[in-house]
Length: 258
Image 1 (tube, rainbow, N blue to C red):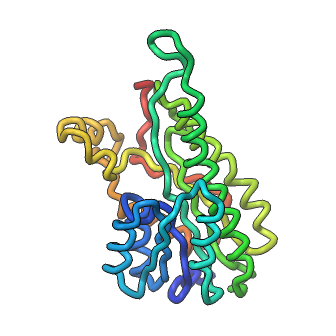
Image 2: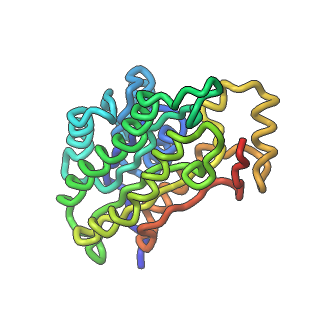
């Protein structure tokens, strides 16, 4: 089977202005994909779109707001050739079931993490799927692919990751039923579960801590490069037999309790 030819197709990438999302946009654009960067950080999104020229455009908005998501999907689908949707937008949080003073986990914080990481993924996935389903069929009836982002925390949740692990575990849980739902219209669904990546968030840590995190990886003993995430997204898009799968991209790490 020939790989899906991405050249000339369109994609939407949430959180596409930085980190894993930015790397994904760069990789897809290098393959001739017209990328719509959907991000809350308008200055960064605008800057990246300008750098990539005709390879990218942007929509400033929030994945937790359905109208913003629809607006972004509509822009990405202009021309009727939307085939790729990648959900990278997400945030972290640290909070135990009960705090050191015995008080319970804050509900507002738990709810916020689910809204961004889980509801945001749901919002864009469902709206993008509706648009991709209108695209012309390719070989074997394929129309496109959706790639969601979970985390190794979905499987190896550490102390204080209750809310984060719950949100990412739910993204993992959506993978198979979404793929089953969308098989009838020729849309594949996969999820990537990254480990420790050299993103702007980890960039805030002192260098000794960053090195220690890298050393904790089984092999290679370093933080992941966002370009490696982008490369996997591109491979999933091109490999039409990858479907309903959750792929750990983590150098073999299994996270300890803390």
